[in-house]
Length: 336
Ligand SMILES: *Cc1c(COP(=O)(O)O)cnc(C)c1O
Image (tube, protein in one colour):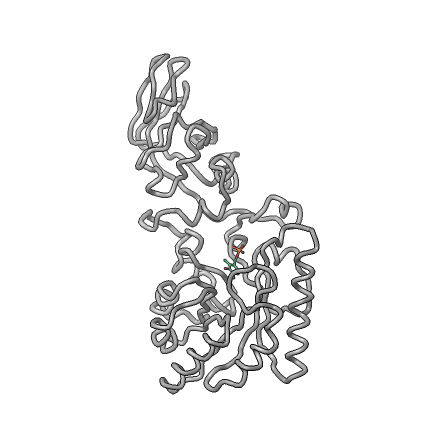
């Protein structure tokens, strides 16, 4: 299952889905709106909602043939009733909470609850799954989750309740969890070539697929002592060249990278001059020759150097997930 929620982790959900369509068992999204967006494009791979949708959204989700997560007997009843009314049989995946503590039937109630769900008409119990909160940490928690999940699958198997898909692993889990209980994985971030955690760098080689580029729209020469931008955080210590690019926090560049991030031009790194503005970044180019229209790389390769999403996230004291998922939907995206 390719997880393409949050606009394909900021990369553009339709373009990512187009690239993967037919090669994945499922597309995983987190809302009905995203599921419908995929449906409109008539992809071959079916669509799965990882989250819970509310009762009033059910008829549309079911008529569109979207596969839903079930985290309680009550939800299963609602889906079964609505499916009967629509004269359909609806595929569901039952989520078991083995330690994430958000959605899912609590582990200790799971077997009984799933037996009750299996007795409902109009449902096809296609999948069973769980989720790992700390797949990158090696403290034994995940092994316990895998064991508990296996016990449930086994107990249900003895009662004749079997599932086509059994899944647990997010990106980090894909690397860390090896158990024959599972026959499907759900990577998100890693699909886009980004590490969910630096500890995974020694396990798998990933290269990012996203570049964020913009062009210089203004060049100014600042004298020593001159300041640039809000708060006057940047003070030129020597005469320098300040280039302005039209991309700021409203386009998703993190404000917290103010005064800390660097960008690339002609294969070299240059620091931001002061704060990130709503629609601008100012860059301190020193005595490097720059011209209006020159391409500046904020994420991605330029010459021999590159800025990874993970590096920008560290400048902004955040996680790479947040950097990519906040890239504004209105930014033009070009797919190679
Ligand atoms: C988002 C999500 C994933 C993918 O997680 P990554 O860490 O991006 O691989 C997998 N499963 C569920 C339930 C999710 O919500």
